[in-house]
Length: 472
Image (cartoon, rainbow, N blue to C red; front, top):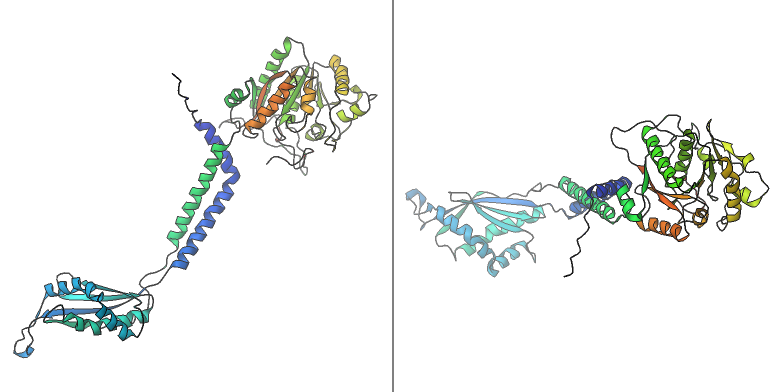
């Protein structure tokens, strides 16, 4: 018997994370949509509003056989006759005879109004009301009805007499007033519901990584660290991102976990070269490379950091220094001394190479030159970190991965699409990369977390990037 496929459950926390992420980007559009629909609803209500005017007359009804009232008339006020007259009124108005008489009085081809009879409870009084869009028409129609109705009434109600008690007048103000509040509120609510519906749909369709479990399940690799989100620290009057002088316990702990797992991964092979890459620009790969290098140096290790992203040499910029000789220079000129061009970070034994970026998109990594540089660095350092470009943008990461003893794949929380991540991992795997694991970056801190930041900068490559437009 074929087992039924159990539908995958929706992770409520992951969905809420995506929902808030989408809402944070689209809240202004949701608000604009609500305001626009509110305005449209108001305008529609205003344009369709029709004022109505009412002209009224009050009558009493009496029945009998006539005679002289001073000698004792046989007429008497009759409540039941009034009720009968009111109930028969609509059918009498519908007769061709009554209609033709009213139209003749009005000298028009139509009756622009509605005639409404109503009896005052338990009395012989009834009221005729004519409602029309024109105050003059309301008055004229009522006058025509008063004049013509007695002539028709004699055919239906014997010995009944209508006595007018309140004369009709021309109405001065409409009986209904326009109020746009309801229309405004209705449109606003509709806009908010539609906007939130779009946000919910986008959140459901979003296929990004929001936690370590999702990442591990997707790529089937260990998550070596979850790096907390670190705010930007910038120099005054400068756009350069610089290191923070303070310590961030959360960041420090995550980096200690990452370096411990790297130690364990490299211990069997005695490897030294660690390559960090990501799926797309803006995932904080260079940030983690620098922080990892500093963390390893704090343990007493000698570390060399090579900025291997030829089209976006960002390490020197993130450290607030000017470019010098970089990987491109050593690839072009094999006579340059690598050791002489290393620059030190702070007081610990951590050095880096970072030069000018190239604008040539077709320029690829020279594997022989890279191996020559690594051969120079290996005897002098305990660790060599290669900060490579994103692996789905150019092929450099896959080419550099051949020289690495361990490849760490950086994934920014709720950023790159799952399909893109899988493409990047697959590309590295097909090129024989020694994938050690992944790092989930920019994980939101829980409430009560540390407010200080260690070695922290913002995540991203700025407004311009050598590979093309920045991911939105």
